[in-house]
Structures are given as structure tokens and as C-alpha cells.
Image 1 (cartoon, helix red, strand yellow):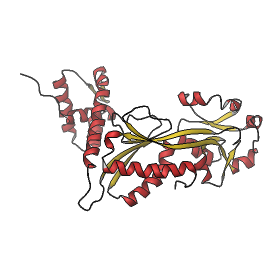
Image 2: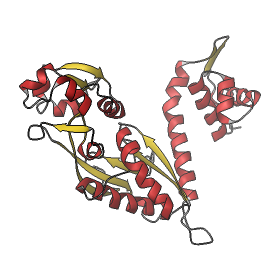
Image 3: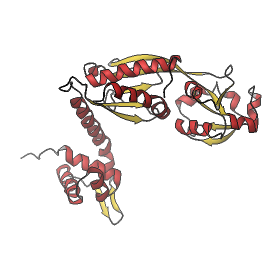
Image 4: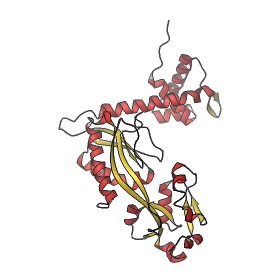
Length: 306
């Protein structure tokens, strides 16, 4: 006699308890009752023949076996979400309106400052499309369908992706006029030595690649360290110091001044990508086309986001 394979509901409850740390928290997140989630955990443990959580007064403590299963359960969750998005966006409504959900991923600043107004215009044209906007500076896997469409600052390498080059989106040094009035405007690398900089907190492949370009800033002191590009932009706007942000974004705000443009311009080779299987998905195709047009105009400086 074979044991029935656990259904998705059990894994979904497992993931929620893993994330929330308690049955009550998982129940609230899933919209289920606490006893139901508890039964799901018991059933999954029995089916798998292992203990997934240690029960204590402090909550449910995940075992080593639970952490080992987490990435596989996360893959199930991502696949389930992708299946639902694909099913919801297969066709048009009865009135020939494109309907469905499309998951778009981009960096924080790109998503908040650039894509949001573009997606608002998309909704004007296609009100039946629901956009799921995932903001992260890590590259989400389009092959695994963690997202449907991605805005990337590098050329996609996978052959099964549909990719459209947007162009270069330049980064440069900027500061608020109030900051420059208080501390002076640097004209050379040497002038930068006395200024406060907004820097990254954790070194990564991108910052290591930029290190030769930023060598002239080595002696400048840090006013703020953060790995969030949104925090950098906010700190520049607040007059906290000199930082790097998109030139096109800064041009929208007359209070922001670009510094040393002849000495530092960082071109980001920007691409729009989606899995080739989504070519025939009406909602994904419409979203991809709208973003490609709007982002190309943004990169070329012929139109601003917002």
C-alpha cells in the first residue's frame, strides 16, 4: 500500500508556519483557522515521516529537516503562482478586453520612480490587467517563472528569453542645492575629499566593477551607508550628502544638481526580458510592448517617467 502524496495545501501551510513562526501567524496569513493549519502540519509530517517543527511556548521552531525542505517548497509556491498567472491571462474577456495578472520585477528605484507611472498608463489602456510588481536588486529567475517580465541592467544570457535592449540609463553624482549651499560645489576629484557621501553598505559584483571609476572618491567620508537605491535617492533629496542616482530621475527635480559629469558617468545597459513561452500570452505581450516603448523613450530622454 502506497502513501498518498501530500497535496499543495499542506506545503503551503508548512511554508507559512516556517515564515511566521507560529500556527496563529500562519493561519492569519493564509486566511485559515489555527486548527486547520495544525492538521496540515501534522499530516505533512506523517506523510514525509519526519519532524518539521519543535513545538514550544515560544512558537514553532523549524527543524533541520524543515530548512532542508524549504527551497523545494518555495519552488512549488513559485510554480503555483506562475500557473495561476498564466491561466488568468490566457485570453481576452467577452468584450475583447485583455485580462490577467503579470508579474514584473525590477530594482527598487526603477520600480518605484520609473515603472509605476508607466504601469499606470498601461492600466488606462488595459484596465483588465493586474500587475504584480516585485522590487528587488537581485536578479529573479525568469526561466523558473519567479517573474514574467524583468527590467535588467545587464544583457540576459538565457536563449529562451525574449529580450529587448532599452539603451543606456546613465548614473551620475548628484546633490541637493541646499547641501551645496552649505558645503560648496566640488569641481574636481580633489574637491570631493571634504564632502559627505552616500555609499553602499555591502560590496558586491557591481560595486567591485565600478571601483576603478570611483577611485577618486576613496578619501571622502560616508554620511550614510545603505544597499537600497531608494534610500540613496531619498538621502540625496534630503540634502544629506552627495550620492549616485539615475541622471534622468534627477533631471525631474530642479533642486538636484549633477556634479562632475565630465569625470563620472556610469552607463547601465538596460534590457527588458520575458520567457519566450509568454509571447502568446495577451496580458504579458501587452505589458512587455508598453514597457518597451516607455522605457526606450525614458532612456533616450524623449520622455520622463512621472
